[in-house]
Image (tube, rainbow, N blue to C red):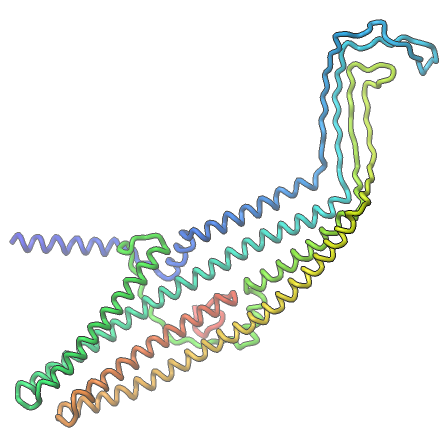
Length: 442
């Protein structure tokens, strides 16, 4: 009675554990991976740093202000002062030396021509922020592909296990038939041993699939930062879907949306801004100046309040212009270099699209081939089973027919999942949704 109660308690605990385990879909796994990824977090910080650098440049557009406050005591001074001339009456007067001096001055300077370089510097930093964002999004896409491959491989192995279990039942049936024939003295023990060997090989294959399934789940657990026993993966069977977009449509989608293309455009923009910034040392500096000065101890030669406004033009002319000329020349060469390298990269991206598209079509044909192989293998196995029952064939031929069918079923399953992964890879790579390039996709 106690044993029954203990068994019931264990079963309840297992039921509670599995009920508590969270079931995660592919989308859940991707979202959690992106959230937990240290690499993505680091790139988000890099993006935030680039934004701070850009936002700080805004203050370079504003004028600079200088505040001067002076308070001076002169303990030794001549109270008799000094002789001077009153400029209003042209009469000699005596001006006493001040015992102290109190002044307040505010000067505001607004550079004009340097704003040209500041604007290009701002554009460069703004583009750098965009590049940091695109690099983060590109890394997110790479993580999506990694998680997607793991998720679909997990599904593939689970469905493969179902086929292997069916084969196990089939071999058990063959074993019982062979054992009956052996017990009846119709065949020798070699027939039984052949099937036992095949059953052991199948157990080894099952163990390999089980180990790989656990390994993949553990890998996903690391990516989403969850214990492997705390979640289950949602079962998701794939169905046949065809590529609905042709090469020209895919090319346009890629040109408009692919992140690498946007990165190339940003790099060309920065090279152009760098060329414009290199010219700045050759431009004269024009600045507007305005200010106010208050003197509480003013005299006839020192006005009490002063307001001034004006401009300043300066131009540094010297041998450093030679260095500037070479800097400009260097920036031009780098701009041309960037454009040529980007042109080569665009060709490689176009070639990659062709490869991805060809991969999708090749795997679609693999599905059709596997279907025909299954049809042929099923018919062959049916014939060999009938012949074996009538003792018109050997266990070797029967087992070969069974192995052929199992291989064909596993081949179809593999082709289906590989085709699904190829479609997802194509969609993510060119920067579009899966359903937009497939028939019946979602």
